[in-house]
Structure formats: C-alpha cells, structure tokens
Length: 261
Image 1 (tube, rainbow, N blue to C red):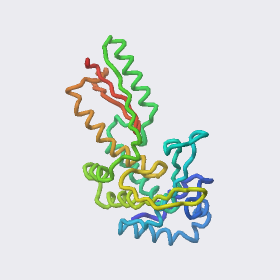
Image 2: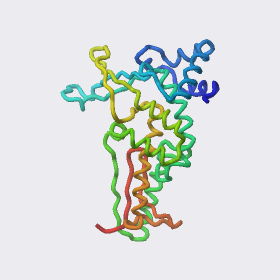
Image 3: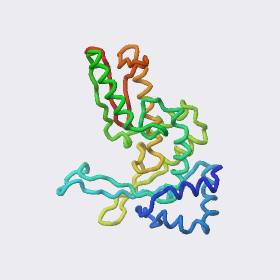
C-alpha cells in the first residue's frame, strides 16, 4: 500500500514554478491544498495500487514543439517538450522512488547514471585510469564511444516487462510500470491549442519521473551482453584483476578492448 507519508514526501520533492500541464493544476496547488485533498489523493493511489490501472484522462500529455533554429522545415528541427498532468507525475514519482532503491542491487556496476551511490563523473575517472594503465604498460587498444540515438523513444514496452521479470520484480510492480508507460495519450500543441490524439506503441517520455530508472534497467541487458563477450574480447585488465570492458552512463557509454582488429 502507498502510505500518506510516502505520497506527501513525493509531492514535496517537486520544485515549484513548473508547467501546469493539460488541466492547469500545478504542484504548488497540490502542496497548498494538501490538507483538503489528501484523502481524495490517497483514494486514487489505493485504486491504482489494487487495480494497476491509470485513467487515460490522468495520463494525457500535450507536446509543445520548440524550434531549434530560426527556419524550421522538418520535424527534426523542433524539440518536443512533454506537458503531463501533475497527478500523473505524482503517481510516477512515488513508483520511481521505490524503484530507485532497488537499482544498486539489480543494475550492473558498469552503469553509472541514475543509480543511487554512483556518479557519471566516476565513469570519466575510471576511463582515464584505464587509458593511463594502457600507456604505462604499453598495451595497444582502442576505445569506442557508444551513443544510442532516440533511445528513450525506441525502447520496446514488452522488453521492459521482460527485463523486470528476469530481474525478479513482483507482478504488481510490473503492472504498475506497464500502466504508467502504456496509458499515455499525446496531443500536439498547434497555434496554442492541443490537436489530435496519438496512442504510442513504444517508448518512454523524457521528463517522466519513472523513465530514467526504467531505462537503466532495460539497457542493463546490453551491459550483461557485453560482459558475456569478456572471454572473446579482452578489455582493460586493471591492477585488481578487473577486466573492464565497458562503461555506461544512461544511453551513452564507452567500449574498451585491447584486442587487435
């Protein structure tokens, strides 16, 4: 069950002066009226906990297109900004806080982003140390930079559920996450008004509180796959006998090998 304290803690963690979303209610409104609306909010969370369903009206998302340059002629010239309801953000935030606590136990140590106790700067330091080790030992090798294009947009929902299953997450957690990512409905803001209704079949939203943690769980499959090639492609053998083959920071990373091509 989601406790009242857990919900309120998630609410107060949001910063103020953010977009109100499709229905005009900001997080400041929920904070200011919490004493009056907390029972209603807790009832919504109870229904979500038990039924694992989010009403589509709660997960409506308007997309504002921000021009990247002066003259725009194709969709790629615009940066999409998702405007989601505050109530959905609150639901996703509560789940994200629970999910975040599990990542250090379920995500490989090669992933440095969005995992509690790890920093992206650690990846930079480790990579520099590995290259320096090669130089000192006069070992030849190469480093490949990895960058997954539109990684959040392309990720498959079934694959997300597969990874959650393989990592041992309870069925209820999997249903909560599926409800969050699959109940979304997009409208495009054109001339100041939302137009159309788009029902996606894959992808997760940047800016959604739960998206970063879902992504690192899913991309962990790539990390495990690269680890499985350790006996075929030699990485950097550090002083502590660690065979460092790659480092990841969200959808970016580096692949290191001392094998000749």
